[in-house]
Length: 141
Image (cartoon, rainbow, N blue to C red; front, side, top):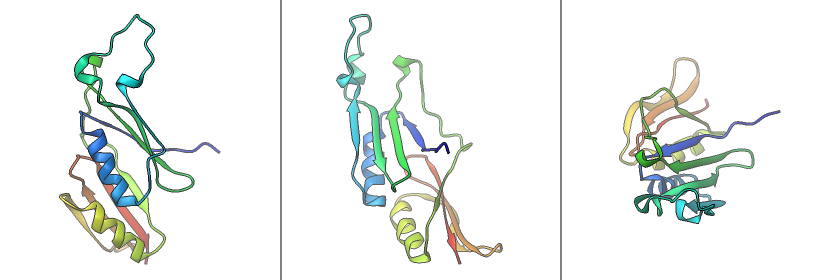
């Protein structure tokens, strides 16, 4: 079966955001590379202002899920947009785990739905974190 891992793009704040996510999930990076680490074939020069930006970062969340990301830059013809068409859903196993993740993830966040018992019988909460990423936290009642 195929698996899906969230891949987040940032406009220069990828490492800062991932240091935050590392503190939220309590895991360590499995890979970090900056654009300056890319091998050069001589046909393309990495712009100086992008050399320290994150080319790829990986943060295992569980045995099956890895949160990944990178910085994008206008010199590459890219810009990260946080328009709300994607949210990351965290399915905690217990209410204690959900509350713990919620407490860390909600630092400086915009809460759109407090973590509470929802009418469909599960605990659910939604927020936009300080980096513009939308999250939902859920667990069985």
